[in-house]
Image (tube, rainbow, N blue to C red):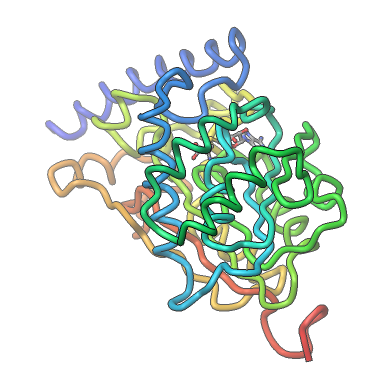
Length: 301
Ligand SMILES: C[S@@+](CC[C@H](N)C(=O)[O-])C[C@H]1O[C@@H](n2cnc3c(N)ncnc32)[C@H](O)[C@@H]1O
């Protein structure tokens, strides 16, 4: 009874947050890719170092970025990850987004970021700084297109590593993005995608992390806006990667619902989500390798 009442309260409050997110998007467009303000460079640096460490933690053991071409999907406010990949010896970094949130970033920010990056060597950091500071679009690229046409925005490049953070859950059609991404993956390409599955609006995210899953699709869609979390679950993403021929497809959870909130968070969910074992997963990383098997189109011989 207590849980049912709490869930009713969260469902009503959550509707308010859905409305707020919709209204904010109508007023400001897509403007705040993460919780750190663009005017807070130290906060941004801490955020980037944290994300970069997570991306590396999920890469295959022993994976060496030296000499690799790296693609980041939806970098949001900064291409800082690219600078760090270059510092570790990546041959190139290219980023693709639908919103131009990282355009016109001050190269001085990259210097500050590199100064706080304890890894790699002095030569790598100097090279990264030079490439990111100069107009060198082949080595440090950025392409924005509202159609999110990944092959076109890749401008003829192919990649050995494709990463993203907190991006896939915002895609309108992740299956198409995965198919498009596959077209620019070199044989042996590794993918690491950190995906945030939980409610995004602050406050309610802490109280009721599965709040977005409480609403039937037609009601949830009433509040749709560009970038609204798509509510796909790890198995949905994994199946799209497998369909496109990626192998060793895994989803490794990072955070799960706090035990104190578990009973409430798993009850009162809308039909497609109710009773699913995976609803305790709040975020994690999908990793995969392309191509799937020898003989798959594009496989190296
Ligand atoms: C939450 S932000 C994450 C940005 C960055 N990776 C970070 O960790 O701060 C989501 C990213 O997805 C992009 N995005 C939002 N809606 C999208 C859509 N419908 N299709 C493709 N990308 C989208 C945004 O431009 C943004 O870069």
